[in-house]
Image 1 (cartoon, one colour):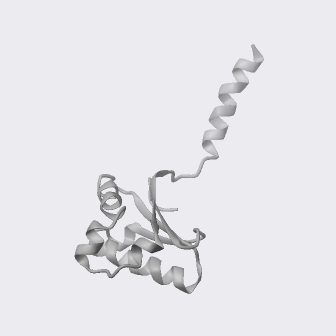
Image 2: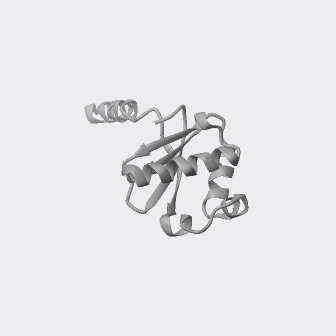
Image 3: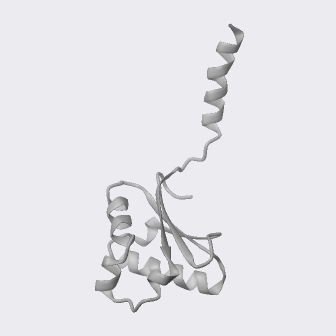
Length: 116
């Protein structure tokens, strides 16, 4: 009987230790896709960007996290993508650029809540 009372308490305590934001969805944009010439028409059709923007727009206070590999090249790529996301209707305040991703990839995540 004691074990039955302790188990729900352990679940509750574990839930309290979870981060305030949770990743709702994630995608990857590879360097090869980004390497082609970019203009408005190319960007609005570049997978997975249309899906990412639609998914973000369905959520009220979600953040769009762009995780890049770090370094100057990764930061420039992430910043340019952030600018394009703003042009596609995502407010700059809803975009978070974060180093720590994989080389040659940008990882896009939609997180619930007010940021990472």
